[in-house]
Image (cartoon, rainbow, N blue to C red):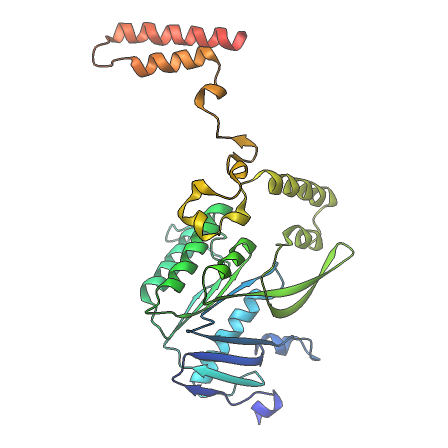
Length: 326
């Protein structure tokens, strides 16, 4: 009676590696969002062709809700319950691993990032071919490039261990990772769609094929009531960073992953936030400092006495002061 009232359906559960959910819903959120406001979504995956679904989209778009509802539907199906969907075919799952949320462990002396890494390591060390992995925004607890690199490597690990191939839903705000679809055949890009209206964004909460090309983080900050001066300054900084930083868009090509020096855009790789590290040391330092460096390299510490060392240091200090004054 409750299943009929809530429009639940009897799932098909078998020993296949498939997972097909048509018009799946989150059973808790749909109760809070009455009058049909909850947006149902489809999920279709298996270990042979669609093993990893990489879900991109801005914050608040619904990425986390989608991966959580899949986990709940699988649990309900395997305990013999009807599930919130129009139809559901679930290949038996032996373990559900989750890396969701962001919190530290003060008692254990673990930062948010350390908690993330502990949980991710536990997943990678204990998965089987029948596991279901739900990862949400992995790598957010550290710097952008560190987080992107770790998330990227984990996706490759999950894909390339062909003897395991666990079904994986991986939600991320790193839209650069969508390029993985070109080199990992069992990874498919999906995005939770949004629509731009007059500079604002409208969340549609629909899961669609294809990757997101933007993060919309500044738009979300503006929606949250951030002062307009901060928003405008953030847009200006973002424009400069996108212009000056390493060409992340080329980070994902297979050739570059193996031969970073032979990138398609060598000039882009020479600069990081405007700093040109392709120059030799001599181009950065004045001649007086280069001479000091040469003298320091040639100094034989096994033969110089403490007094001679002090004299040398004193002379170098005077030379540096004269160089700065000049």
